[in-house]
Length: 530
Image (tube, rainbow, N blue to C red):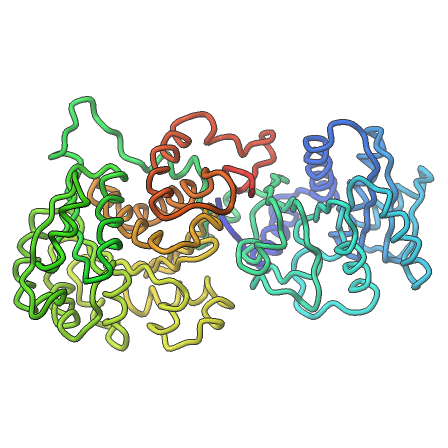
């Protein structure tokens, strides 16, 4: 599913009207219909709805929605921040129609009006926010800011039309103040800012509504949202006669004193992901502890310089092992010393299969990321925001403010796939493409979950999925496994690992299509946020 910037969405709207010949009034009528349809799905019995419509097309969508809900038997109170007769373009068509059928529209222009609106809102079952929409590029002030405050302070559930008012739909930043929505029905495609924090946290449950924007107008958009159907389609079949030798071999280079758990999680994740064999190469002194815990994983002792520190002389053995495997993951629980840097410099350049770099491996690559450009296969890096900041010479806040841009820029610069972990993980490629993952939540905010992701990526590559699609599938399934756990607390990384089977089962059943409300409305997440 494509994800668009505000400018790209505006251009798609323009071309739909001018090049394809579909009038803007039809688009607006369809948008209002889609919002009404979603309300019918969450409130099948008519209820009391307050609609607050602002200027422009977003306000026009609100006018259409109010009329359709009223016609369906809902009690509708329509408020507008625009003076009577002041709407322009397609919104003016809706306003004129409402006037001719004597549909009452209340105006909010003074503090007294604001007080009346607040009183009316207190008795509603639902408020529809159609004040600002997409394309906002300056701070919200005055009456609109006051209205946003009133909406947020009420106990009434909020549905935002296209985007929560006050949200920058390119960056996800709050422009002074913004509505906190329970649901957002956005049109044609998700917008960047609805999937980037803090916007993603204000959007609530995101529903994408088809309003007849032709696919050919958006097919070149470089950013995509991962969906359950797409991930299901890229998972390899498991043949009836499959065995451990045909399902791929993974080599994990990991472990150090006190960090053996990270190595175990990554190695076990590779097996749970479907790889036939998982080899864990670790410092010799750590192997007894690993072997006492691991049953299905094959451990390989590497020579040491000192306890827990792999000798640089081990690199030839690691490369030899890699030659008998299909993917290599390096870093979980690995000591980030000079010796590790020496090993990595040679391994990256000579490894005969794709390499995934995480944790300790990323720590020693700081300041030397250009070496990734010499890799024989496109490498993958899996930083969390703090690691990304150190690798890119940025501050963590800067990374979080520009997650999408940062991921794309450095994937190009380093010639690698960047998997920037965090809420709505981003996968970026050197060719400028990016994928946003909608799964995952608080269940993943615990030590060791990043190690699981590294092992799962390696597992999928070993099974023959391309590194790009393997990264996307791993992020989605890893997050889904966390989403399927009950509640937000009480879980550890091992619980997420144990839930991989449930995540795969979810994708293999009709539940993977549970995001559809009707053919024209689709929820972004395969499961509702808890």
